[in-house]
Image (cartoon, rainbow, N blue to C red):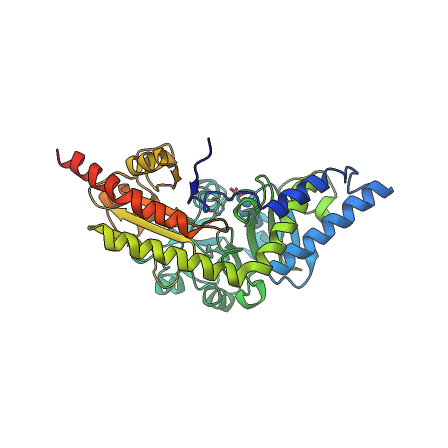
Length: 386
Ligand code: PLP
């Protein structure tokens, strides 16, 4: 049974009907896109058109600066591989600067990087999740090879000042990557004004199916392929093209670009309605993340005296899907490291719920949550004081 109110769009999005149609059409394009015959050329043309759509979404100068990958995690991993490219090795630069709130596909690679001679520096964030620019400035030096800062955080939605981060990185000649998986489709993503060398995307966050991502690689910057043994993607990623996934991502990118302004306005209004409604109805809460610099659809709230997992399960029984930064979501009992880095303490981190709205969220959905949530919190708080 599908839950009727789906507020977990940062985890993944439903497939847009227009994207589903493109998936269906793609199945007729069975030719190997690398083949020279007609079916191959037809598939190849469709792929190049999809690449153009993804490039347009992020304002890349040329569509061949975009390669397709298996997911956002692969795009992130592939960028870190750049640290071992001959060009960077020769330069002698071995410092990698990142933040304490990156997605695990960056965050958890520290050990591997350090074991291979990279010096990893993690920049802290303030109470709203914005990186400490002073610590960042101090960390930058002539030894810095690469910096990676996410454009928008998946748990709290906080948006970083990527143009400023890039500007400072340029002063020491470092390469810049941003993980824009949670930013694409929610805000303007522009590799030119952001001045980044690499940028990661994932299709399933923009209403396309899972299993396809993309990576922007600015023309001329170092890149060491991650998957070897094929000429695809101009030698930057081996493996037969995923025609269906790529076409789906292209269509999703087109829709995201065309609907961005109107959609983000509509979603922001609904998110703010949810936020204010919760504030009015429930005491002892904390809104996590920056209020001002936040993607439109994300609302992360801690409910003091209630466990996130219990709230999630009670809401689920009411047909409402949300997520929690703590325990169950990660399969561990540790509170979310992102929330802990905000300095809110373990109790508030354990009581957090992330509501993430999307293209198909309606006002009725918000009304439903505002009706079902207060008695759940009340019940849980009563139970916890017993
Ligand atoms: N980066 C961020 C900020 C994410 O939120 C996610 C997914 O949750 C990823 C990267 C990984 O994307 P994928 O699920 O396509 O591997």
